[in-house]
Image 1: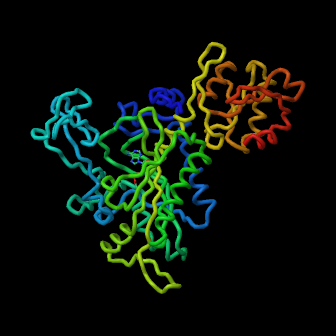
Image 2 (image 1 turned 60 degrees about the vertical axis):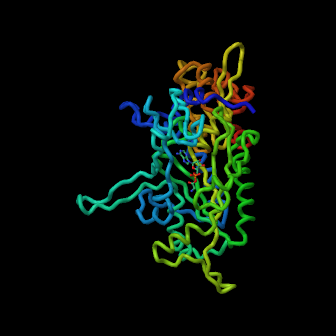
Image 3 (image 1 turned 90 degrees about the horizontal axis):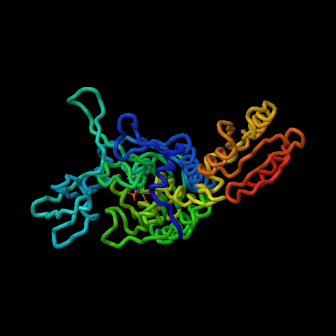
Length: 442
Ligand code: GAP
């Protein structure tokens, strides 16, 4: 399956206002990005698709929205303070630092620098452990400051609230807790645009089950999450695959883990991890907090820690995969057309309305009236800032499924031209019938 070049995506994002470097006027901040007018909407549409599927349309998953700054003890219990490290090696020639697992080992203990090709011998260059969490301090008085951390995953907010959710909702197993939110990691490798960043968003579910049912739900969530990427946001299934983790690769909490990978131009890479976490988190938080976090099964009259299946997806990576998947270059009448064939559900704008001639007030007025009539049905934009060819090109590049053009004939026949983004076919549709026409199309 064809996949777009990262440089084309980066350039489209900057050109059309999807993504900008953070603090750009001050030179940017490494591996932190801002989403512009279209990026913000596309990102929200992806998150809404997830939220609708798992929170709105299900009775067995409850939402929370927990704090980004968390107590140090949380991460002592979760194992992040001691174990959430990258193993780093610095090249003495170019001064760049690399994760050791990303380096080519040319002989035992000697690695090749991917930047300047010098050899890095671990006898002279010590391998260092580097904790990925971002630390901060709360309080105002210097000697009574409390250490806190920006969360490196949204998951811990759900585990520490397990008893609160259970006691207030009285849910029975199996049930899930879900949230979408920012996480922070002081990543060492910071290339590939928004693929790996220091501030990013996650869409996570902690799904609590009877311990004996964990393998069954692990399988269920694998299939369900793959279905979501294909059916709910329209990623081509040939560009997706599973990669099961080998035992030695598993995170400290995981009994099994599978990644959903996407076929990026820079290789097959992880979009999401689906992990079988056992009872690691609840039992550790119970131990460290001294609170009983067991579930009470009133039929069997017993208390136990439920097991957890965790589908954990990255919003920013999904965003990048969606753009990659939708990006097409076509030749039309000898000219290159860039078009984002985004799934209609997540396209930032659904319909654009243009007047063919902006020096004809009656045409402009009618186009604005059509915009006003349609704007509460779905996201519609009105644009008259360029000639028609340029307006079409703009909307193609940002993935708007339909454009409506109002012309001289519209004034007499009450019809407009509706152009389909993918086929470029044009159809005359009566103005009075537009709402019904689009109801059908969406
Ligand atoms: N709670 C489990 C957890 O956080 P993870 O595999 O470390 O697991 C889950 O992260 C997902 O979050 C990844 O599959 C990825 O999509 C996203 N993610 C993790 N680190 C990221 C980073 N530095 N930049 C962008 N996305 C990231």
